[in-house]
Length: 495
Ligand code: TNX
Image 1: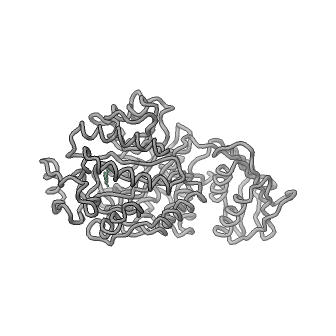
Image 2: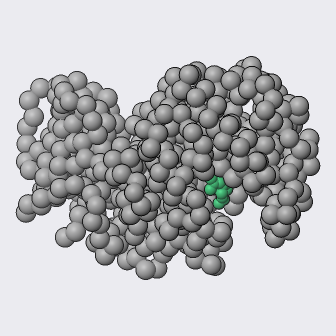
Image 3: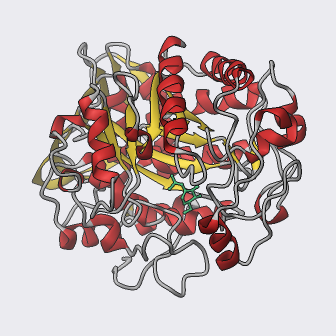
């Protein structure tokens, strides 16, 4: 039998036999693993309906033991013999529990196959991005994404909080941003924003699922919504030939200064880069976001400034990345910002193709040259907002049609020539929200591709598509039971 594990653990040794979980199964806590014990109890109740008691003391056959180890890290071991035994630091225990969830088999009662797993992630940065700007995503929807992503061992939640279509985070020192800049969304959908308490609640829920929130304030472009609140800080919408052609091909209205933008064109907006009032604003906003964010990262955008002169763009990037460091955070930018002298240690997020075009590879390498690293989000394999096939009702298709095999079959180290392996921080899958309105829509684009990306980010190099298609097929039942719908492409046997 192939164990239905995704992402595939680093080492799996199967033995004959199974362990039955019953009404008398207990959770035995060793060495202050109480937090993990309660995650485990909830997982078991949710998946099996069993409610084991949580006890300290000596384990007996049939028990599930969680033991916290002294060392830190995301690695764990899981042994199933006459007990189930999960060992790791807090993060490792969480991942061991996610693995156990996939091992549970319902067959008269619940059983777990005998196995020894020793597991650790390939990359320390394993991210999912959601775009709350184009379509506002309520807190509960964001939590639902956290449930799904953390079950596949993702550990970063990148929130795209601002864009031309709306500003989604309240900032005390700049209250008009959400008062005036959050009322609508793309295609005239309802607006919305996160209060500071909403944001704190997302951070708390994410942390409980071992995910670090990475807030993004997209600058200096993608800033039309700022102009609804503080018109003096933004340039008039840029309309060069390329942008006019874009608007025409999308069949959309042009952006108008001071009016909400409800199209999905990109690249026409910018803050006034040389104006000191802009820098007071940027400092206020980033200070506010940094104060709300316990995690080490602050994403400051830098993508698609299609009307901004290169020297101005570069000057902006140098200053904004330096400011982010001054505020105590590690800056992350989209890879275009690698044209500039980014501050030392800045992380670049590569969204070009797996075959880099133009200057993209140079820009990505710049982050490593400056002592930083790169997150791989190739748009033709890792973008969750692209269609599976031409007929798929949701999603865009500008980067590629991304079926499950395409989402799976790529190698982060083989994209940017000359980028040192140790400069690859990890992998992230962005979900832009132009075409999604509901959690059901999100699930359609996430499942099953999120499982493919999880494995790219977690499992050792040298993955095998045929083995993955068998394993992922047996997860459909778990997703269905959790109420996580999604797409079930016909090339997989969803047994
Ligand atoms: C490109 S890729 C974007 C987003 C859009 C997305 C739609 C990148 C850094 N920016 O602004 O939402 O395409 O697929």
